[in-house]
Image 1 (cartoon, helix red, strand yellow):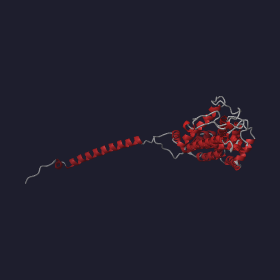
Image 2 (cartoon, one colour):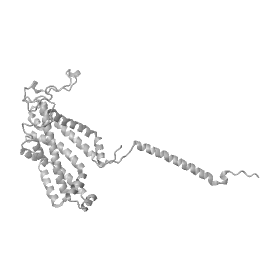
Image 3 (cartoon, helix red, strand yellow):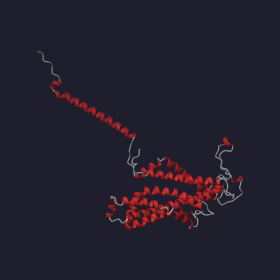
Image 4 (tube, one colour):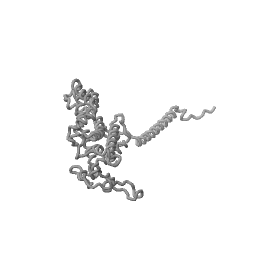
Length: 353
């Protein structure tokens, strides 16, 4: 009987198993390397980076298309209004003044031509009076630019004053609570109970009709909504751990409010201030239309509409040009406010690189 030769497997049964395990481990390692390379390649295409809150807000705002378009047009309106006829020490490139009168040419019709030459043969051009002339021969382009300057000045002052007053009242009421909160919030309720237009008309009639004074007084009566928002934010923040830690370390109420609480409410304050500016444009227009706004010899967009409302059928450009600027300013500021509101949204906490 012939005995078959013994193979390495017969001599050492575990040798082949060890070899198979080594091959398997090598395959696993190779597959792991491939998966790591694929993961790195995927990370190169999609990366989540850690960013500060400021970077996240700015990035989201810059990616908000409607806000960017609105910001472009708003800046264009401001630059046009300031640079055309000048403001203070800034000289203007337009050679006519809003106070200069003259002979009415061609019934005061606008000379602005926006049609190309192949349509009407004249080509695009401003002409002598792009927005026409009013009934006493003043250049209406210069008058409209002056009205836009005054309306923008009033709106910005109202926004600043209302933001300051509303933030102070809301933070004091929310932090101290008790009797202080009751008194301040009842004051807010009283102001809200009075129709805003009536209250603004009373305030406007008591001023001398200048834009700065009118904006200051209007800002004092439109802060109520912001104060309620800030109060609510402060009520939710004053019991947080970082505020308790600051209080335990001996920080006073003023330092806690200004250094720890208000910085965490900045998003609410900025968005509310932006929307307040947009509302102030319309409020000033309504007051000037009623005769309680800016008084002659100065002018504003609302006063121009009020003065030439009867000319709508015969000379509509005297009504439409200031109306277009009012709508443009209000819409652009509202879209900017929407963009800021979306940018400060805490639910959006990751941005693709």
